[in-house]
Image 1 (cartoon, protein in one colour):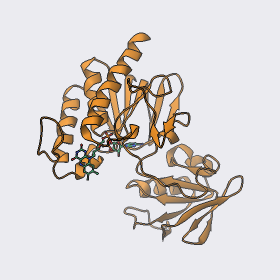
Image 2 (image 1 turned 180 degrees about the horizontal axis):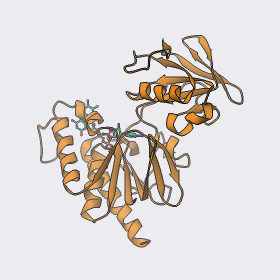
Image 3 (image 1 turned 45 degrees about the horizontal axis):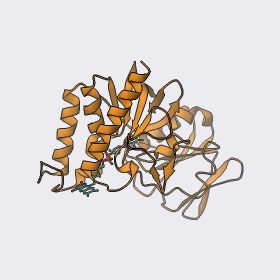
Image 4 (image 1 turned 30 degrees about the vertical axis):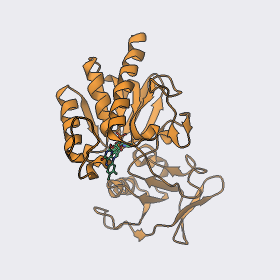
Length: 282
Ligand SMILES: Cc1cc2nc3c(=O)[nH]c(=O)nc-3n(C[C@H](O)[C@H](O)[C@H](O)COP(=O)(O)OP(=O)(O)OC[C@H]3O[C@@H](n4cnc5c(N)ncnc54)[C@H](O)[C@@H]3O)c2cc1C
């Protein structure tokens, strides 16, 4: 199925966008980590959301989620790993691909300090997606940098393909297959000239052909390299349109103030603009 609108991110901005788009009768798929993953879930008391003072962040999120769900929004829980902008938009989650005619980016603030060598060797041995690129490294040594909860499963998948996997993470992994070596390390650097030669972990070099860096979220600019940003945030106009046709953005990813009411308002506007975009080209 090709959805009218794909929404990346299941926080207040993404959920508000879904509510507005369903109000215009568009088919909507929200792709995101579990909605409880939004940073808002950590707020013990939200006093600045107009009309609803004193709720916990979790309560507000749940009400937004239930509202979007009741209006017929569809949800896929998982990490979007790659995005193809051709003939609409195709977002990959695990081994599944989801298609839409317009896209709303609402991933929140993706905080990620890249490792030295990571950007330079992206696509030349560095990958963010085991499912997409694993086959390229069959029977070859790879390192998995596990920063997301599902990283051990991804490492197991690579091992099942025949990759010789070493798992590196600052945190003890849960669910890693027996036989996959685990190295606890936090200071990392990707090494290599034209292609990856290894991963340096706390000063020790682990020779390998591929480094899979598995974070909780992928920055929008890693998904859409042509997306324009300004001082680290997605550049949008008053319609929440980005520089790319059919791509809109809302919430913390567009900059300050990092607040729920702003995220919700922007999500609403982004959805209406996406509907206009679709209606102009039925
Ligand atoms: C402790 C704390 C307290 C706060 N208190 C308040 C308050 O009292 N009042 C207030 O107004 N604001 C508060 N905030 C700020 C508020 O939480 C944010 O402004 C708001 O959550 C932004 O909404 P958003 O939808 O833009 O992004 P987010 O809420 O960050 O949601 C984005 C979601 O998308 C997911 N995602 C990102 N990339 C991907 C990907 N590639 N694949 C799948 N999923 C992805 C993320 O995991 C996340 O779940 C607080 C924040 C914190 C941390």
